[in-house]
Length: 317
Image (tube, rainbow, N blue to C red):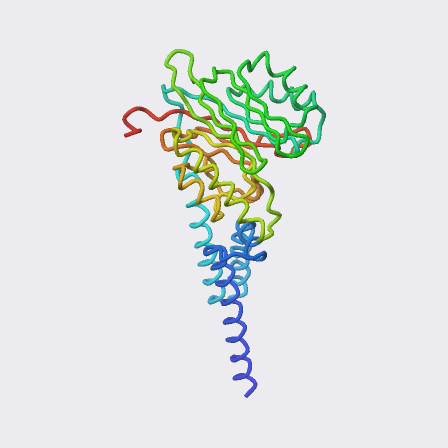
């Protein structure tokens, strides 16, 4: 009798844990909405590694059914996350086509002073720099320091969080600032290259934080819809960079990237950076040859740095 009771309890535990693991996985894959769903989605990488560890524990305990369910859920999440990242197995080598280095930073991530950030940006050797949360005082220092190296620039200053700036070594052929409510977005065309010049459209945007609060996500989607509408009468952006305040695999972010035909530049699924809301996306006409966090004084990521190149002519068709 006791043996039968133990077997029954064991089956109940196995069934209960399996249902919990499958439910959590389903919530992340389907993203039904709600605060808990958002939290799980934003921390999907942690959940994936947690399920992998869970499966290893039950492997050691020789509970093979739970082990298989854990590994299956971890595999499903890994496949889902990889589908929202760069699909290349490795970053391509530099080709003979036009290329450029890009840096995007958010000043609120920086713990140092004016001089230290300006010095890091100067030493980055980037061709195009996107800076967000630019206040009037920051704008003064950025202009004084960066303008000699980046004579082509545009700033939209704000005493709040919505200020932004673009600094380019290459000529800006076209620049346009459009707003979603009071939030600016900058799009323009720069002429890239020293000899074989190519026009490249960029988009820089900043969205209000959602704080994983379900009621704020419709505002994020509305902002993305504004961007899509305003880009309809322009050439599609080759680069889109900014503080999007959403993970790359969220429903809202995929809505934006699918409509603008953009590819995530991040290739690996990084355990330590999965919550980063600083992104650089690129079009299918381009490819990313390198991407890394832009590290500040306190050894923290204050943005992202990437290298990009146009694909060879035959690869574009």
